[in-house]
Image 1 (cartoon, rainbow over the protein chains, first blue to last red):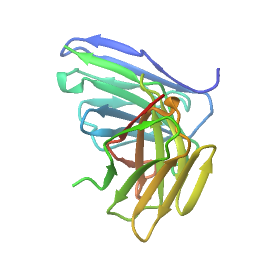
Image 2 (cartoon, chains in turn blue, brown):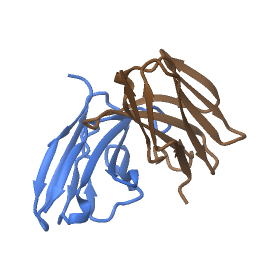
Image 3 (spheres, each protein chain N blue to C red):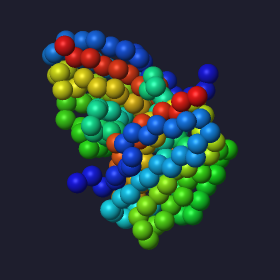
Image 4 (cartoon, rainbow over the protein chains, first blue to last red):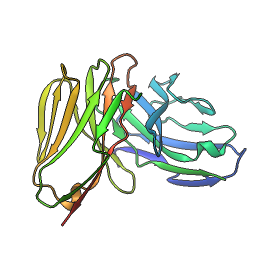
Length: 112
Length: 110
């Protein structure tokens, strides 16, 4: 099906473990984004990508790594998960940097 | 201080009522987005506007650039409109970088 999908939808892990959240979109959108959503903070940008092999930091990038070898995929990796990274993570895409955003369903991550 | 403030934080209404959610901001913007987040988490873009007014079904969004204020109106509200409504600013500086409000939780009772 066309759209933007995230996996896993739910993940429980332990402090120190590596976790990768996957994001896949079928529209060939150039721009992709990772946000985290926490109570009291709203959505905050972690990383974004303007095209394959082009990524840049957002507002809260520490502790996260991204890559974009293919236009349709934008994985987010927590190299050594911490409890403060317990959050709901949203991937989004846009055909242009200033256009409408399309969000995935979210990935709820709990770090114990 | 957050660049974007929404009011009210929580709103309860009876089915059929006219709803207004406000978004005020303190910085220059190139566009403003209204998003809807239903229980369970999915986020949907409702409007993106840089001037004037847009309408889609029972939803109307307006923006006054001079006053740095936007409103989202819902006419003839329905329980399925119950969701969190989020205002987000595009400051035009970093492509795709939006500044999000904390959202307004709307509950519409039948």
